[in-house]
Length: 448
Image (cartoon, rainbow, N blue to C red; front, side, top):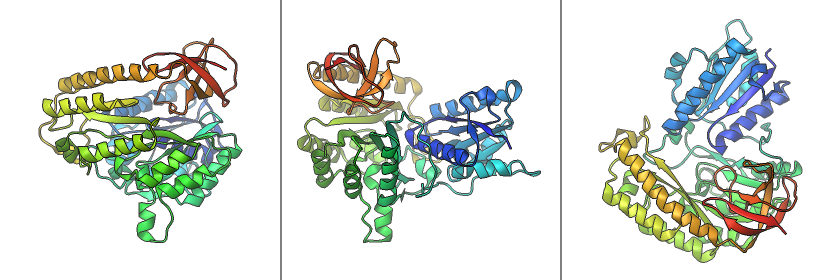
């Protein structure tokens, strides 16, 4: 049996949790994890296929790993995740370099699959189920720094946005029960975790499926947040991926009252023009979206709002884009991400007429991000002179002469950082930092 395994995890934090479950399964069953591809007898590439760029990255990484069959010790190349789940027949034919394909509902059986592959007539394809919901006894190894982790609270998605293929890949919403999530959080705290980021495809739909099956079920966004914020040792609990229609006043009041619930709202809006929202099947109007924004800022004036938009969706003319640009300037979001629309197979958006040219998409992308860059500079300057709590991540990625950390308002991997030019601290420490300068996306300060 090939015991040395190297795992490559691509895509979003939800995919990373799947990778961590595979690591837990492998280590439990006696496999050794190596960081050196050339030493690996098995390489696993956990793929993403959300947009065209992620598909290209996944395929490139698979082909790169396959080269180890010539130069390293590689015997088994395994491809898991969304890419094989989405393109079952095509990918098996087009990537003969791959020995095993595992879909998004079978990855938790990875060590069993590797054992079976030693048989005389090994199976190559594992696509029976669309998704796997983490269970109470599911092994998992946290691959993040010891003081932070992601917790995935559900799988699949209830929404049917016309640009998104996630429900076709991952299936309908399946929520974990609160006791299982809390037990996982306590285990993470016991291992040193202070900061957790809650991930799902839509936090605000959490528990809907369980309440539908059993009207007495207690699973809801409010009850989950209340239970998580009661876990001793969790200093920062940050929510990622919120659909704006589910943020009621009860949830907002709880976030306002609990110190360890980070005042951070990651709320992808995608567009704001009513025609475009309807074409995207977003089920909200501009007025309803703005009401949510006003409600957040009324309850929590210092709340950070991060959002994402899609430019170049079919039917977006200059008038619709101009409204989006005006909206971004008006509301001055703390963080904005932007995607150029790429048609996805099997989605309503991919079949629509009036597709937008790549040139127009790129031009609109740059116009929107140029406007947001000015806003970002303005927003960052207001922190100069303030003392903020910062969690230390270690040496700066720019130079070993600086420390690097994040405020509660900066999610790992997607937001900026705080560069610390004076003072000493260890990774995982939460310290007071006086902000003395700001850049487009980063802050600068010293420990006090």
